Length: 518
Length: 114
Image (cartoon, rainbow over all chains, first blue to last red; front, side):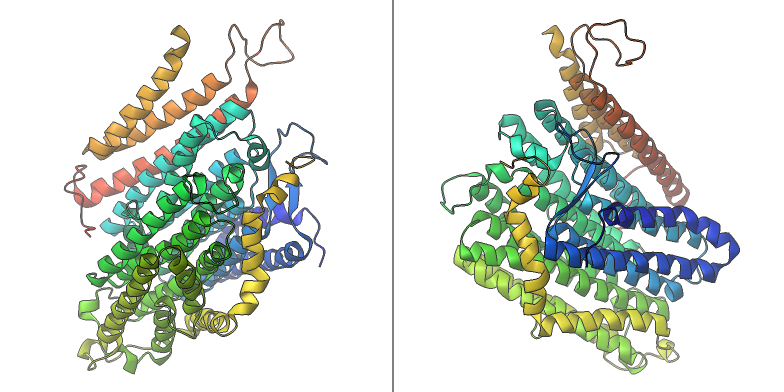
């Protein structure tokens, strides 16, 4: 289906306008507001899907603000959407839609929900803006919108000291990170007089200052993506926020991950060599740097998850390990850019972005369901819940097996790609990855045992299954997980492969904007 | 040398801000650290657009001569506005933390442990 170009800004504008309408709608009726927010986000998700089908068949789309055509030099802000951007937009839309539908029952007893929904919509606009924008400064602005909205949401339960503490930690980290992104943007701007990613990419010289800018961008964005050793905010934020916010935060983190990919593969695409010669070139240097961080993340994430007793903090450490797997795939793909296995690694890393979002999202929703039913987060005091909560237990088993990479679920489909390709890069990487995956299974089996198995505890005798709307959301995500696990080829061929192509073929991204290409 | 003074100021502001973030124990001082980094980055953007002997870039009332470059100033304005929002949010969180814990010392505000 051929979508007009103005669909691209609409996808960002609809949640933004919706955000400012929400307090007004909220004055009329609370139920009406919930319906309104769900409709806005469902409409937006529909637009994203239509846009995706268009972009995957016809290629990159651009939209220039305030001008009919591009004139050179480019001083206008533009949105440029390729297969990678739309891939991330699909993930964000699904997660946010799931979160607001789940919120209906989950957050019912809270006050201040008009602000809650407003902030979720703002956060959505920020994330979609981050993945759609083709302009470095605009990227910074959307990054800040995302940080501010997510910080306010992390600290939403202000009556709990921990939430406020986690929110403060998050805003300090993300404000500093964003300022360093701005500093790097200024460094690039001062040299090339351009802010447009495509234009910068076509003229970048990889001078000393560019190297500093690259380091600042990668470190700041990787910090926001929650990679070890810059992960300390992540378990606090994921653990202290309401469950629905945790899964929205998962997609906000992934938007920062997208920033890393865009910077390395597109902005500095010129400096990468596509022939895999293992001299010390940019690929090998940055690639191994990312691989090293990834392996540390996997190990630290899993071992820290082992010792947690708080359900949500445990999942959060699992999420750190999962982010490690993504970076492992992407780093290996970067190191061996141009070889067949490098390509497999990149595919695996990108595919794992989607799988991690769904698996960790499902686990957070299950944690939320348990909190809803029992008001308890500590694993030491839970037990025997499988008797009363059959469906939740089933969804937890699906999430657990998927996150640990068990066939036939989706986590396996992407992890096998990462294992087989990193094994060719260096066998030790694959061995560490597999071992940690098994440990992750052990972690979640322990959770399963302590929360769901065992004798029925007297205080949980009257625990009821959660409301149907929450079960429905978990069920839908579980179905998607099983579907991707059974037909991974379908997803890889239709979405992941074009996204990886878009990353590697950065010249196409550039030639859309800069006439004549490079 | 004289032309480098703004750049030295940028480096000093950013480094002092980072120092405050890493070593200071008081939450308000952490906020001040972020403000200092932000001022440093804003100053950097502004001096990137400055040319020697230039005037403010207002086209309609220009007496002629070199104008400084307007784009970095637009960027800085945006950045300042965002900065205000971030700082306001941070300070409001500090108020909440003070209500819960009765202190601003980061060593005592540590219920979230590893």
